[in-house]
Image (tube, rainbow, N blue to C red; front, side):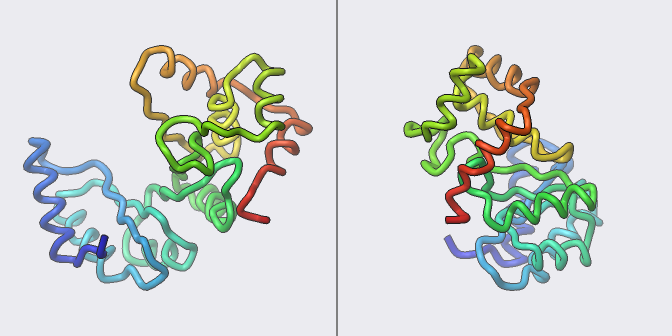
Length: 193
């Protein structure tokens, strides 16, 4: 999908406001999708923020340079990057920097893992399954709890279609891992191999 121009972004924001019957959007994340400059697109969203059509701005699929560029234009309240037990890459650094700057880090594919599909991964690593069994929880709960334990600024996107999964998601928020358990989970990062 080609990136939206600044003019298209304005049209998309206005259309979302119209369709939702709102006066403004609470948060708009600029989905970046490439390594280039985001100044023109983020500046366009900043103008919409100043006009009262958007309350807060975020970035998605960003690198550190783009985050810095965005923050030089307007306040950034959240970063939404691919991140999980088995795929961290540069996002580990971005998560840490977001914590230092008071920015929420909202990972996607945290529960699905390397499968990048909705729901928990169909194929889990033996170490993750063993830990889940030892704790009496599901692998998805381990993934969610690990993600939340990465920092006080970390949130999760835990979609669900039924009450049982909602309860599992909430319960996962209370799980805490020992240093030894964290070491096992941290070693599962495939993006560093």
